[in-house]
Image 1 (cartoon, helix red, strand yellow):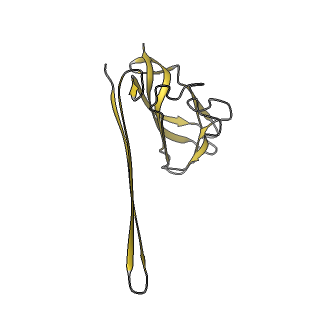
Image 2: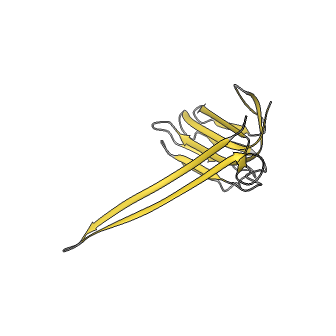
Image 3: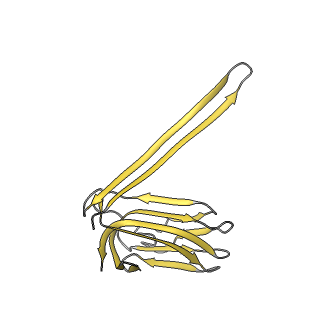
Length: 159
């Protein structure tokens, strides 16, 4: 089944200040868009995997991106072009990343961030190589139980 994915991000920030006589308004707009079509090259992908997950208090959720599954069967990513994660918990922080090489989709170990409640993380690599390497994603709960959503888009197979 052919894949077509559109990733859109839009930011529009307004700041105003008032002086004795005049008022100024500063607008800061920016947008990012990425379209991935079906295939195995730059700006292409073949597989989308998504899930709503729960991490036990103080626990870790390790995802081997070369060995996932859903209602379609077994999914094996060879490269990841987009990673999106959102902490859906109302009060608990969530950590993204790990301590080893390739701890997050082949990214360096320095990708080790805390997502507060409602926080989101998006990283894209539309090049022909995408993110590869360890193909391993690690999420953890430094406190209580955490819920999160994840979407991965990349090259791979469904069996």
